[in-house]
Length: 302
Image 1 (tube, rainbow, N blue to C red):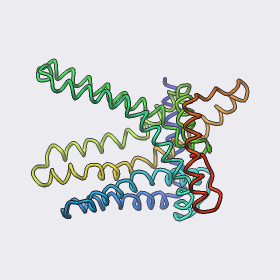
Image 2 (image 1 turned 30 degrees about the horizontal axis):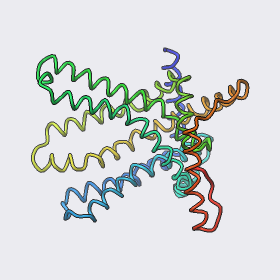
Image 3 (image 1 turned 180 degrees about the vertical axis):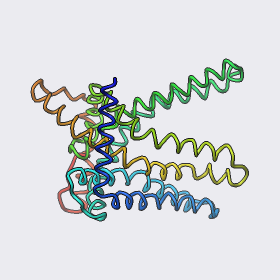
Image 4 (image 1 turned 90 degrees about the vertical axis):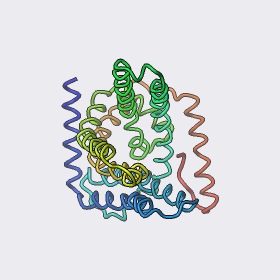
């Protein structure tokens, strides 16, 4: 296990070195994609009239902030990793081309994450409604529930951490990339887990403490605004976590994925399950529709 933590630290250090190649581009992406979330906070704070327009606007802004930014970070980090220094607009253009596949991949990892975590969360909510939950023993059991839910979330996220990198940088269909991430992280779980914890933990934990502090101390209208804009605030906070996490994970990917391909070249490739093959076939349709609409070839599948 010590070797895994050493490996995670090595990837984290390599990631920080990568970020130093184009720091202003990384900061520009952070600021640019924090603006939509900041817009949600402003809309809520000034209390614009309720209605479809406000709901649609805040939803779109949150999606822009949370969904588009990651692939931009990934492309910027990949360029910096080999010493290239393209400008911000080049990364935006390149990242946009890979956005459909990233989103499709992310749909898979989201389902993989929320099925076990969601089931456990529902179980915890059901337990909280029982009379036992109000006792001292119930409080101890509640803490155990929270630990299990949190541990499951970290474990599952570690198993899918490489999926977008395999999909985008490895040019693997999103459905297969999610499966490959699960396979590879199973054999390399120690380094993957350590990389995730070392790079995300030191930033995520203090931010979580700050959010909890505001939640416990704010009252009245201020608390209402805080809770109503929590999703947007989280998206901004995630922008602080992504650069070191993406850079370290990319360094991990550049060693783990080529090593996996070399291993398979010697020992053979695993079979692709029928469900994954079906999902890949389904993901051909959007590129084909887009090709017909724009009358030019569009790469696929997603």
